[in-house]
Amino acid sequence: MTKDMWGGVALLIIAAAYYIGIGQIAESTLSDDVGATGLPRMLALSLAVVALALIARSLIAARAATVTAAGAANDDEEEETATLPRAIGLLLFGAAYILILPYAGYLVSIALLIAGVCAYEGAARDWRLPVIAIAGAALYWAIFVKLLGVHQPAGLVFSGLLS
Image (cartoon, rainbow, N blue to C red; front, side, top):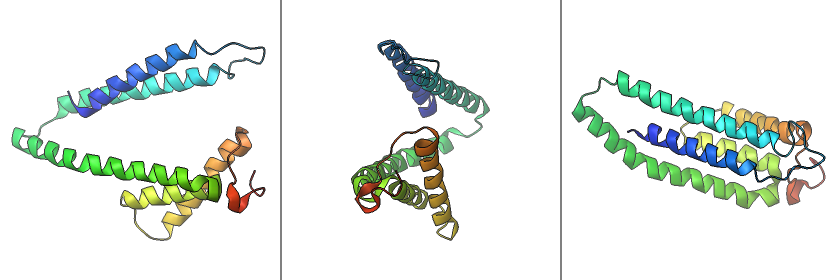
């Protein structure tokens, strides 16, 4: 089985466990379709759909594979050596985001995270990179703070301006 297949199976197990865990959430008078259990149920369902798509993609790729055994062995070897350093690099971006967040605030921190990850993944370093980072940060801020009403830290630098 491929990594996609294992990943899909693992995600499906996580989605099932998450869905079962939702039953532990206490019902209240404020509960509705999108209340304390509605959104987690939608998230569990979304995770299950992604897991099934990953499994299907793995099965389709296995059928369509026309690569020779020697070529496949070389590809697997290259993929394994490149995967761990890339994962560690992305983990370091997440850690830096968490460290910067209380000081710079959500809007600046998420823009830096988007720009950093895009540059790390090989995006062209031209005028589009900061535009995408700023637009993405503004979109996430608008979704969470304005649309969903989820307070995000403004940071020490911008406290009171964006909350």
